Image (cartoon, rainbow over all chains, first blue to last red; front, side, top):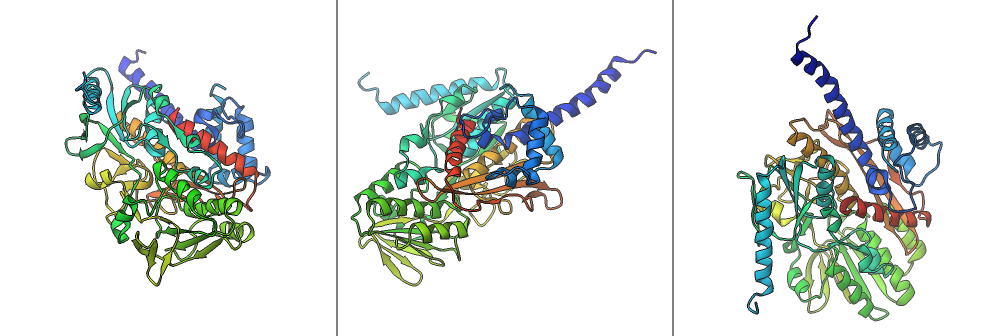
Length: 100
Length: 421
């Protein structure tokens, strides 16, 4: 069966578009960390850890530990509570994909 | 060439800049965004638009050649940091391809989408971002402007020459002198800022002029931010130096007698630091972007787009704040990223992110080495159609501590880099 080209394009375009939107959302969520942790997670100070390139599972588990009060902190336990688990996963995925 | 003075040069440079920018409009760029104001809001928005879509031309208009940070400027007043440590250039933004024009915006035609510059001519835009910060309502305090011109009163509520002036006046004051700080009714820029300043001045007096006094007159019913933590620091670190009086609104300044008149009495002091009430920056007023109480710019918090003009976004201290959203540098930086994402989406024919998130972390130095913070996370509420602080998230330090002193300075380093490099 021949599939018209325009239909193939349309079929591809929808998931690609959705993925791009999801990337943009993750990028925006991660950008809320940058004031303290540096643009794209590359900190210019040694006082906070650079998030860029850290493994996704580590980032997500630490954020959950802050959120659930299992990891003590000065401020991160308060900030982590403001994000949903889905948002935490998106943020973790974004930083894991950044170059150190 | 002798007759070719500085003003002519600036005119020519401005014209050259504008004409080369005018040339950009039709030559390849997808669209042009003009940003007014290179502070925490505007500089961040300019950089992030370029990072997220390099096909968009971004022009940043800023009157100052150097950025001077309000956050950390109280440390300069207290003598714990120098003015050079809170100043940064705009070169880093050029590396992102942001066109920087040091000029003054005289008018905005939101119908024709044109920004008029004092020296550089007219600039057209596809989208405009207005981040002018605050200007002062001098008229609310009789005699204020004349006293300011005579350097008999300072605000130091925009960092720069006023910061240096206040420090100089404190250094020149005799031991046993009186420093008076007057705080306007909220909302004003940086809710905890005045109380941090009281600590910083008191820490300087404690070490250099121990017989001197810090008198704090607050128009508000109580300390507006981190109240218990500030009051504990005052009682434990600055007993006998800081005196705090709530519900005291300044109504006049007499430069001749160095007196501030409040509703119920008058107080004389050696250094007058009166913070006038504030509103959105002048250019937002002129452009008709002010929608609330003739003071603040109403925006759609999902996209940061103005409620008064299409294709115009307003961010930072000039906005009518969403519920419990402070007017802070961090908040402006966070707003700028929501704005940048929305502008990039809209210029690419897409809808803005329907679930924007912002956060705020604000550190205050209660001495040279001890710090307290307040933090919050703000999520979109579909029912209320605005950003709302997440219940149970955020909060303040349990107690003042030295650990957060390093973290506070680290915050400054990273946020300055996030906006400017």
